[in-house]
Length: 104
Length: 220
Image (cartoon, rainbow over all chains, first blue to last red; front, side, top):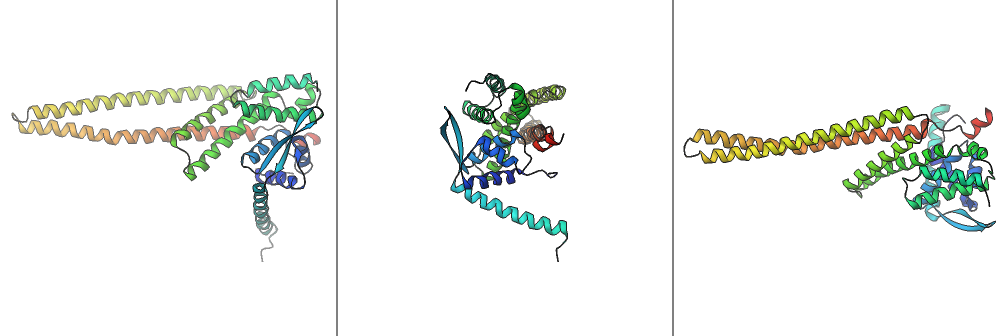
């Protein structure tokens, strides 16, 4: 993918992913990497920011004798996801209009 | 799980994060510890191949903190929730973090040296300027008041001389009242230029030299 994916899109992707079920850090990174070519070190800052904004919460669950940190979307996070979806639709329509030239 | 490669990687990683608070350190370290275990990376090579060297990873984490912090500063200023003093402190921390990130980056060593030299020079000049200015203000305030007293003392001998001294003294004091806020404004402007420069540098560090992305690695 030649065009760089913006942070907001990545945040939206993580939030959207978490609407179906809770995931742990490595799984989120891998899931997003199946779609966008992000580096492994990109995900931590995004998760940190999402948590700081209160858009997701975390909880620990025991797994094979250690703790695994799961990420869960909050109600605020769902609102934010809606906002990102709307912004994306706007950008998408605007970009299509000007790039494809079908603005009649 | 006994993973010696991971422990040594995390230990080294942690050294570079010492600037962050204890909770922040723990949070980021836990994240990557978990990541390494979940990704089943059991050798040093495997970890570095996936996450980069500890230094590199720390550099990214630090750069991210500094930039997020200054963006947040601006948001807070807009909302009027942050005092000038807080903003100053946060900007200083941001500059420190960017410097640290610079130090942790192996390719940028000569640049780091130049930047630190420049910073030392700039701070030195600023301090010199402030000292000279304070000295001048002190001298002129004293001589202004002195002139007024001299004027008052000769008021019954020579009225024109008295008027001359009193007028001169008042003028000097008046100029001082103008100069102080102007200089404070100049210093603030100067600091904001330094802050903008470091924010730019931080962004360069974060985005300019990223490790190859997943897709690029596979294509190579």
